[in-house]
Image (tube, rainbow, N blue to C red):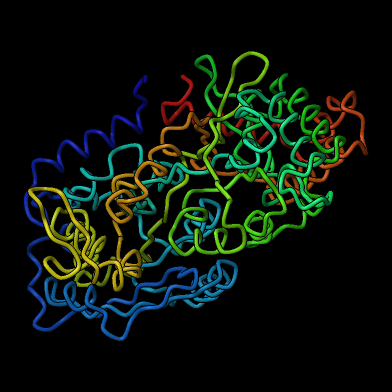
Length: 512
């Protein structure tokens, strides 16, 4: 990859950081910041209070929060977590607190757009001068992860390292066997199997009450988009490198073919008629109840012990297996897209902390420690010899660890190496985890991009989704696709977004 100016600066920072020792580091930074948060500050006599806010997705902290106790004691802290279950509610709360200059000491920005909004409003501290004080974190995260937190050449967030690579088609092998069908290897074969599952009574109950394919909205079709070398436009993961250049999936000629093929599935009547309205576990429930034979889903929702009990309880003979991504006409096969520009979390710090060096220093220590071997094991697995043991360098989870350490991800500030972590936590499911992790995926870059002034992403994305649904359901002829692109550009300024995105990504070293 050709190194750009920003990349070279970050690399130089990382090389400098690697020479530093200790959580506080020994670099000078700039003079103003070194005086405010450098090693010359007198140590705090008592614990430093830190409020940390993030989305919990329904996870609660236990009464006996052993991770908090360990971190508080190790780093001389008193951590208070503000947890909000819903993303929209959380983002609204952070925006209200930003307006009143009362942001938490450390908090998650929900998206790159949210981070950009807060940074441009002057609410956030530029963390660029402090990277040299984060040797453990920057070494563990790496340059590509750090790029995810950049707004306008400044480091406004410390992104969490690690990214899950999951989702593939799962198929009822017992239904294939009953109908004498092989596993489908191409999109055409997938369509034929979906027809058979719909029309040939694979469950043997004498009723025509089964369907071929389901999923949550058009995520169900991700491997079909991938068979044509394009991405699922409903996830707004549209920018990727092809033949050395950044391209937008909407402008790829194969997009018309992908949409036409998906319409064939719908016209054949083999797709869950409630596909567009499926939310939460609705698609999964249909699969578990024996109503459908193919679903696009991830291993965690299929083969964790509690999930298997549900579908085996409903259908004892059910045998769900993972399916390789089906091949398209030119041999392309991608399970889905993975947005490598999107972080598992964007940790931001309010600008006021440049005048509160004790708190800022503790945040830097917290990131360094949770990125270290000992700290990383604490926040991933719990207490050594209680929640896990070590067999050499290998972590072995104990029964107590499986019972009590489900919440510890709320303290994984520096992130984690996703696949190894999951295989350690769910050893008996390692084969399924590896299968999905090793599936070919288009690596999209949208998470790196900042929207240009005057471009309304929400309006443009709404129009894209509405028009794509029309093409797929036959409400608009695919021959009008170029007219759709023209309207997208003239009415929604989409071409200005693409031009800005390509420029930004080239600057980061992608497609240049």
